[in-house]
Amino acid sequence: MPINELKLAKELIRKPSITPKDAGAINILVKNLKSIGFKCQLINFKNVKNLYAKLGKSSPNFCFAGHTDVVPPGDISSWSVNPFKPTVKNNKLIGRGANDMKSSIACFVAAVSRFKVKNRKFKGSISLLITGDEEGVAINGTKKVVEYLKKEREKINFCIVGEPTNPNKLGEMIKIGRRGSITGKLTIVGTQGHVAYPQRANNPANTMVKILKKIKEIKLDTGTKNFQASNLEITKINIDNHADNVIPQSANAVFNIRFNNKHTSNTLKRKLNTIFKSTSRKAKCKFKIDYQVSGEAFLTKPNKTTYMVQDIIKKITKIKPKLSTTGGTSDARFIRKIAPCVEFGLVGKTMHKVNESAPVSDLKRLTKIYQNILENYFI
Ligand SMILES: [Zn+2]
Image (tube, rainbow, N blue to C red):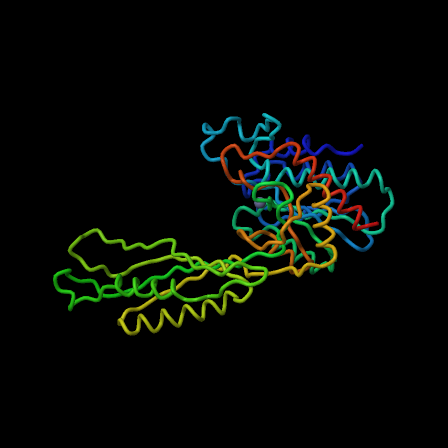
């Protein structure tokens, strides 16, 4: 019997799997996947549950990837329904995870179950790589599972990540890469003193202002065929000073750069460090910088499977999806290390919001898209 995507999506939403809690979400998947013949392997790291499930043994291996964890609901009283009691209102499924991304996981499973009814024997295998840690620090999720699969020499030939990629309508956008992201926490240390005697002090605020102006004015690039221009944004400027008549000892700032594949985190660090060094030396200040890299920029060069996926989406939605690299990071940044990887899921308008929702008709069409992709891939 084919599995119904709406019923399964509701079952998953009922489990409050706020990162890193699983709350039974992965078990629901295991139960459903086993019923259609998948072999399920739980790959747990620390407190995070992950699942690698596979139907068939032979090559090629087509993989669907996603996460069962969700972000917290926020103030429950501002929701029109209980976020963990999925409800259909005006043909929309409402609940936490309704579009990011429990529903697309339900569509994966429903699509495979229908594909299997029609194609009892197909050459190849279908796998699901599901993590319980995507929305959080993402250390014990897909990153570790990918390392494990690599060690086990498990081959994935193509992967679709079901993140909500469409801005407004189903069919608008496939993601074929993502920009990189680096955050810098900068501290400038000067000399504290009386505000009326600046010659006896060294105000780090002046140096910080100079540095921030310089780094904001760096011309990173003007974009590429596949990527928008890289951009630096200053997100925090803090001086912890409780007096108006004191020149502070130190100043802090935080910035983030979203960068395309003309840069790596290391080339950017070098560029920035040169500015920090020379400007603070001139000002006789000291500086400290801490970087956090959440992902490098990457691009999966479109291949014939990418174009096949694009054609099928167009056939079903009547929209030709753009091949894009916009938006934040996703687990595709880990999977692309072992397999060509594209992302396509629901419309992301309400993700992480109060009253997160997805039209029931989109769930139906997404299942049809995934099913058609499988049929074209294996036949
Ligand atoms: Zn997501």
